[in-house]
Length: 109
Length: 235
Image: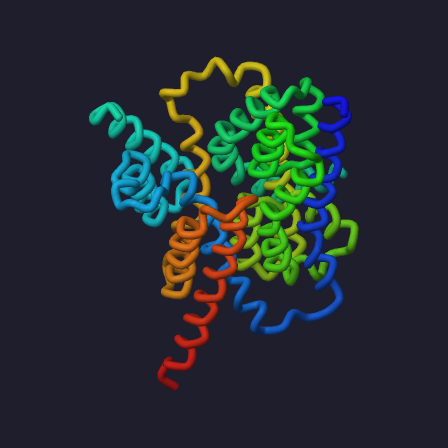
C-alpha cells in the first residue's frame, strides 16, 4: 500500500481508538454512580501506571543486578527525591538532567 | 468562547501546565524524529501529534510503520498501549459528571498522562466542578499546543541534537515529577513497587503488554493494602 495512505489510515484508526479509550468511562458513568470498590481502586491508577511507564525508560533490564548500577538509575533516584520533597516539575527535570550529565561525564559510560 | 479564555481558572490551568510542557518538549522532539524516520511528510507528522496526541502511541506507531508492520498490528499494539487511558477516564469520570455532554466529549480528547495528573489534583481540592473543568481545559490546550510545536520541531531539526545530551531522559523525568509526590501513603507506595517489579519482570511480553499487566497488578495490590489498612484502623 502507498506509504501516505497507510500512514493516514494508522493516524485515524489509532486516533479514534485513543479517543474512545479516553471517553469510555466518562461517557459510561455520566448518568450513574460508580461502585465504591472501583472508586477506591482508581485512586491507585496514577501511582501504578506512571511507575510502570517510567521504569523501562530508566532501567535497561536484562535480569542482572548490574542493570541497576547505571547513571540513569542514580539520576532517576535523585530526581524522585527532589520531586517528593519539592513537587516541582522544573526542579525535578533540572536535578535529574544535571545528575545524569555529571554521572555520565564522571564515569564516562 | 471569549469568556472561557479570560476565565481565571482557564488561565491558571494553562500557565500551571507550562513547566510540565517544557519537560515534554524533548519527548515531542523524539516523536517528530520518529515520524520523519517512518517516511511521513510534515503534514503526516502533524496529523500524528494532533490526532493521536499520545507520545507513547506515536513513537510505537512510527517505529512499526518504519519496520513495515501491517496496519492491523500497529493499531492493536497502540490500543493495548493506550489502555491506561481507560483507567484515567474512569478515575476522572466522577468529577466530569456534573458537566454537560459537550464538555465531557471535549475534555475527553485532552485527557493524557500530564493533564490527568494535574486535573485530578485540582478536582481533589475544590468543590467547584466548573472551575476545575476550566482549569482542565486550560492545561489540556496548553499541552496540546506545545505538543504540536515540539513534534514539528523534532520533525524538522530533531536530528541536529547530539545524542550525548541524552535529552530523551527528560521523558521519564516528567513522569517522575508527577508520581513521586504521590508516595505519601503506604498503599500508593505498594502499588508503585508492585507495578515497578512487574513491568520489568514481564518485559518479555509482546506489544508492551507488560505495561498494562503491571499497572493492573499495582492497582490490585494498592487497593488490597487500602482495604486492609482500613480494617486494622483502631475504631
